Structures are given as structure tokens and as C-alpha cells.
Image (tube, rainbow, N blue to C red; front, side):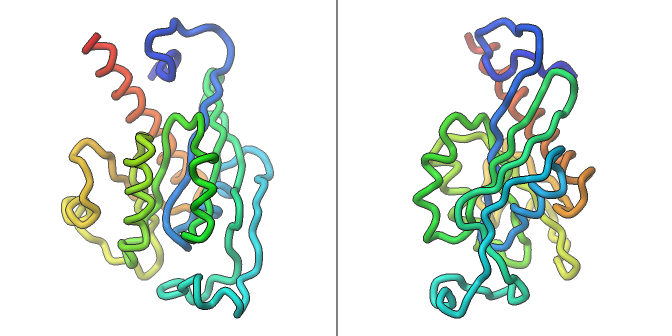
Length: 201
């Protein structure tokens, strides 16, 4: 598939490598840092800090009781999908007390992955609302945990109140190939949106 030019629909593709900013978002403990670590071609930059008793009243650990660290600013990595496309990955903090950073982090982003833990669907509601508010195209990545329930995709779509055009894919954020497949799904989604925009001109 030719990805050249999709990020600027009205501009002819030039030679060389395209750089694209992609956000990896989601609720607290859905696997954002794990995905950046697993898929990045470089050692990722992370801003994880240890969870302490002092944060117990604001960082709700229901469903993620074993979590010991949390992102307080951002995670950063990059991956080359082919010789013409480089993705710069920015993982967002999951706790709502750090979401004031999102407006700045999303500046210039072409699209996003929203990681969802099907055991805790409600933890991703706010992230999806933010994608829609910021008008950022996104795909949903269902991060499969060992005790996740395998819900039908249509039920997930209804529960998250998603548009029929929003892609939903399953993944294992710990696995590089699986995480890369999610990024490819996002690029395909962005390309399709670009093609539609061109057709309506």
C-alpha cells in the first residue's frame, strides 16, 4: 500500500521519509507505556513514577491492583513502517489529574490509538470523548489481558458509543508484531479518510 502523500491530501508526495506524529491514549492502566516499549525501534523515553499511598485517593486501582508505576508526563518512541514512513509515538498519561497535558501533546498529531481494557470499559470513555473533542481520527485497540472476556465487536462498539466507521482491532500490547499491526490499521484508517476527502473536492 502506498502511504505517500496521505498526510497532506492536497500536496504532492515528495521523496524521502514522511514523519507522522501518532498518539497512544487510553485510560489508566490500559497498556500505553507497554505498547510504546514493545513497538519502538529505539529505547523509548518514559516518565514513569512509582505509585505511592499518597495518590491512593486519586489513582483508582480497581482492576489494576498490581500496577506499581504510572506515567506522569509522556512516553516517546518511534518506528519506521517502511522506507518512506516514520511514526513518532507519544503515549499519554492515563490519570485524569494529568489530562491537562493532552491539549499540548496532541498538537500536530495526525491520528491516535485508544487502548481499551475490556474488563474496565468505563476507564476509556473519557479518552474517546477527548479524541472527538480534539477532532483526532483514532482506532480502538482492545488490549487482551489474561482474564479478558471476549466480547463481540458489535457489543464493544455499542458500549463505547462508537461510530460505525471507527476501526476496532484486538492486540497484545506486549507483543511488537501485534502492536505494529495496530499502527498499520491506524495508517489504513487515515489513508481511507484522506481518499474520501479527495473524492469530495
